[in-house]
Structure formats: structure tokens, C-alpha cells
Image 1 (cartoon, rainbow, N blue to C red):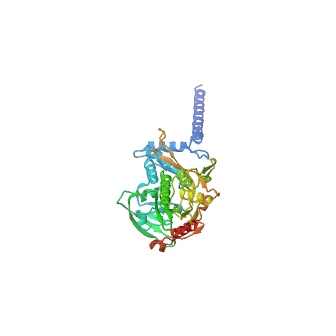
Image 2 (cartoon, helix red, strand yellow; image 1 turned 180 degrees about the vertical axis):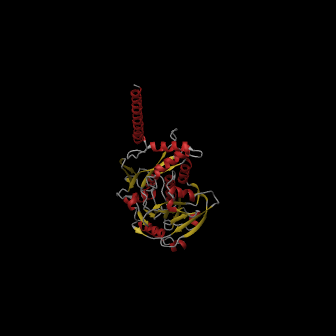
Image 3 (spheres, rainbow, N blue to C red; image 1 turned 60 degrees about the horizontal axis):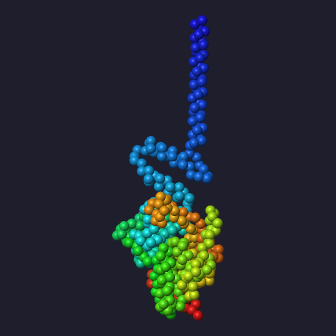
Length: 403
């Protein structure tokens, strides 16, 4: 009798152990399935925030240091944007956003050079006249191989800009490659850069000259004022110089074009996210009846290309110089601190490529650039000896246009 009870007791223990084991295995399996369902996974349609949350949790529990959640959030946003591979779509911190605004207002501390990416290389779009970069001999088209010894191929455009900029009086060393020449190191002392967007003067034989350095908020009104002044001085034709002009606001390009013709397309925006948008010239321009020659080169980009293409396609200008840079993508700056409905953005922002620009004749600016009708090259020897055959040809062409 006792033996039977012992056998039953052992049998019951084994049964309970089997049930417990099965329950444990089922628990492990369920946890594994739950992990698959809720764990980090790639999605084609949205960012997987589960992955970010898991990283944050691990850091909170294991990281041997202090966590700066503001910097972590900005870093995550910056990394997500950088993964797109578009050098013109970038996350801007509050400081970087202010620097962008200062650029367009013509106020910054640095060496006075606009840079971009061309064929995967950090390339000078344009040095600003009279700035440290210009005085040091930096030219449009120069390849910046290194900044203070750091290989530029490891940097985004914005990272490169940060390294080149700095306090007035400090130095930066650029390793520059021009064409097939050997690399050379140029040390440049930073300074305050404040350059007016428009300047003008009278040339010989009643030719007015307008230099546009950037397309800022006031450039349209400054061009109008310069044109009126030159006409009052007897100008019968104009040379508009946008060489080494890296661009600026789209609306300003439309404003300037509207000074030279009062109807017709200025530029078309094409985007996968919206219907094509056409920006037309507006009536009221003061320079619609005067012959125009536009000077362009490899440093003419963005809004400069819009203006040159618009005036040429609408038979309002002859183009002289060299093919433009080919920067025809549209960037919109979206303020991420939208607590207040103000025009000024005091916090971080996102500069995002939203479309591509096409000239009235349908030229894709990014792919083709703007080609001059009269090609004139500016050689190193010309630049080194103060000669400007491009401007000479533009003035000559303007003279021939006077009836």
C-alpha cells in the first residue's frame, strides 16, 4: 500500500515538472515572438521609432555617463536626414539656422567663400569679392581637399562650413587643388564678412554695370535703384554680372527678373509631391526696355542660374562667359519651433530639397546648367594679371545692342 502511494507521488512530481518545463518553454517562445513583433525592424514607409526607443533604454540603463537628451534628439534628426544622401537637405541646429540667416543677410565671420559638392568633391562655388578667400587667391572651381589637415571627403557640406568659419583673427588652412595642378596649402585669416548684395557703376560708351553678389531679401529693390541711377546717368544698355554668385532666395530671383520683363515665365518648379508650379514675372519693372547682357561662370549657381535662364529664354538678355555651376534644386527652410506664428525662426530648422528648377525653355538646371551664347574663358593668367576678358566681351556685346 505504501509502495503504491510512493509510485503515485513520483508520477505526480514528474507530471508537474513536465508541465512546468512546457510552461517555461512556452514563455520563452512567447517572449521571442513578442520580441519579433515589437522589436526594431526596418520599414519602407516610416522611421522605426522602436529602434530609437530601445537605444535610449539601453543607454539609460548601461551608459557610464550623463545623457544630454537635447543633443541626442538633434543627433537622431541630423542622422536621419543625412542618410538621404542629399547634400542640400540638412538638419540645422539653432546656431546653424542663425548662420544661414546671417549668410543671406550678408553678415558672417569667416573667409568669404561659398562651397558645394561637385562630382563628390568639396568644391568652391564662389569666393566673395574683397574677402580673405578672394585675396588669398581662392578661385571658383577649386577643389578643397583638406581643412586644417582633415580630409574633406569625410565631411558634409555643413560640417565643412563649420570648420572653415570661425572667430575674426583666427586662421584656417585649406589644401587646394586646381585642375591638374599639385595640391597646395593656403593659410587664410578669418575676418568679418559684410558685403552689399548689389553694386553698380558706369562703364564707357553709356554702358551701365550691375554686380549682384547674392540674392538676399533686399536685392530686388537694390537692383531697381541701381538701374534707375544708371539710366539717369545716361546708360543705354546694361551688363548684369552674376559670376561667382552662389544664389539665395527664389522669390528674389523672380523680383529681379521682373525688373527686366513684365510678363512670362521666370522658372518652373517640378516635384514628385506636388503639381508643377510656375513663377511668372510681374508688371512694374523699370528696366524692361533696355538691352541687357548677363555675365555668368562656373560660380553662378541657384538663383543666379534662374535669372540668367529666364532672361535668356525670354529674349531679354545675351549670355556671356562660361557654363554655370548647375545647382537647380529647390530648398525650403522649415522652422521646427512652431510655437509662435512669427516670420523669424529662433530654434532649429530643416532645410529640405522639395523640387527641381526648370527654365522657361524646359532646361533642367541641375543636369545641364546654363550655357552662354558667347563663351569666353577667364584663365589663371588673366586673373593673376588683372585682366577680365569676360567683362570686356560683355561690354562690347552691350555696345552692339544699342540701336
